[in-house]
Amino acid sequence: MASFERVPLADAELDFPGSPYSVSVLKVGYYRPQPDGGGAFRADGTVTLVAGAGNNILVDTGGPWGRDSLLESLRRRGLEPGDVHVVVGTHGHSDHVGNLNLFPSAVIIVGHDVSRSDVYLPNRLGRGEAYVVDEHVRVVPTPGHSGQDLSVQVTGTSAGTILVAGDLFDSLDDDEAWRASSLQPALQEIHRRKALETADVIVPGHGPPFRVLCRVGPELGGSGKDVKAAVRPCQDPVSPKMS
Image 1 (spheres, helix red, strand yellow):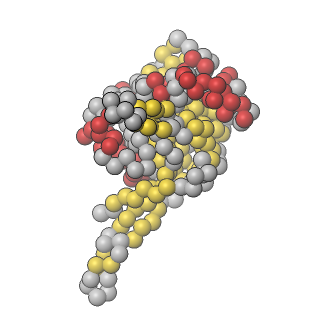
Image 2 (spheres, one colour):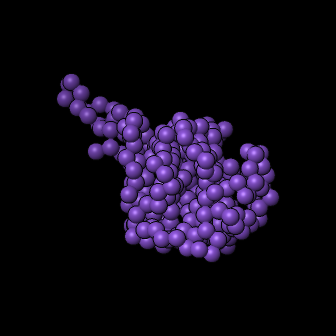
Image 3 (cartoon, rainbow, N blue to C red):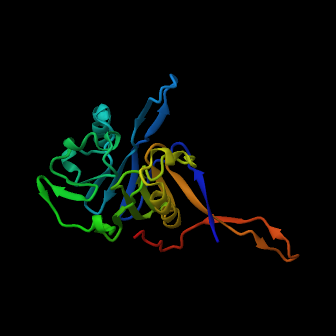
């Protein structure tokens, strides 16, 4: 049975070209406990742009304190808020959906709601089924951190299948720390495992992207002794989809 190894990418590796979609991390989120020991912390969510096939899809918007930075990041890519077609909030915390009001003309997907302006559209997210943008982009329910978490799965990039995961993963090395902020740790653990099984790269909610490798083994060598487990990309050329 394979286990999984999470591997950091180069610090500058935030853009993943692809066909038809490219994925760009506009802002790397963070989480920083404050030194007073009183439980306060500073945090902001990762912001990611999925662009291609006539669609500009923004995954999370960060907190309202980062409004100007978000607008500048979009403008550096030649985009204004009106050029964003879909905004996905991975969950309803203020550091992830604090700038939704900048995108009144976009389709907004948060929790189990899909809306355009004040019109709410039918979907099956609440039944655990993906909202399919097209054959390359799916909005997938991944609850656990909160009651109605979402991730965005993008196929066909230079890095393979990318999962923009919100707080399903806090960061590369969140280990067991994620449990402290999880409403349903057992459910979140199931979706974390599915994510590791189906993604080549994961974009977490509060840190830079990381690659997922499979550690297979240990296997028996010719002498009958265990040999070092093999580490390789987990995915076949055609990656499985999260349900």
